[in-house]
View (cartoon, helix red, strand yellow):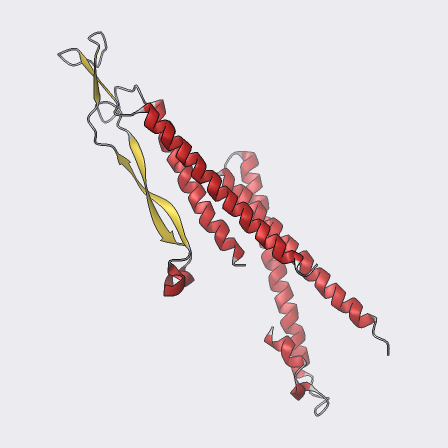
Amino acid sequence: MDIFTTFKISSSALKANTIRLNTISSNLANVETTSTPEGGPYKKKSVYFESKPMDFRQHLDGQMKSAAQGVHVTKILEDEDPPQLVYNPAHPDANDDGYVELPNVSVIKEMVDMMSATRSYQANATTIKSAKRMALKALEIGG
Amino acid sequence: MNNIISVGQPNALPLRPTDTSSVSKAKSGFGDLLADTIQEVNSKQLSGDEASDKLQTGTAEHLHEVMIAVEQADVSLRMLVQMRNKAQQAYEEIMRLQL
């Protein structure tokens, strides 16, 4: 049942892209958040992808090792760019000079990332569909 | 599968007609194969059921995992049906032999 390896790999990519989209939605939700439990404004978060071999047998087999690699999110990084400063003395989080620190999230960049995540998700969903079509075609050989 | 092939090999033919060990071994070999496949297909069906139960009760973590479990069950079942069709065709072919 090797056809299911494709399913597993694509499934890992779908999961990774779901996490990526969650991160983007978190960034967009907090685009104007000035205070966090850790203190300071919200910091933009991004995912870190890492490939992983899909099963141990292939891990042992050097030939196949590069052929079947899934992906998973190993960590979520915080962007270290400085926060945007906006003059608003009436704001409760304003500093002594009247500036408020807003998150370093760019809505445009997030939208582009979101499109990219959606397209990756679609590509991997199509891979699964394709794998299924191939399996069903193979089953038609006998019939 | 090797056991099934060995039935047709010359050393299983008329010289020793009473020796049916390879035949019986082949029979259990195919039976085992069939039982294993059915078991595997059944477990795929069960995990598909379990995944869709989880989706209905709201405990499913990811939607795509549910769909993939169901798709795997679907493909496995289709393969089993094709195997059954093939076995039935072979049986019918043998039953049509003129003696």
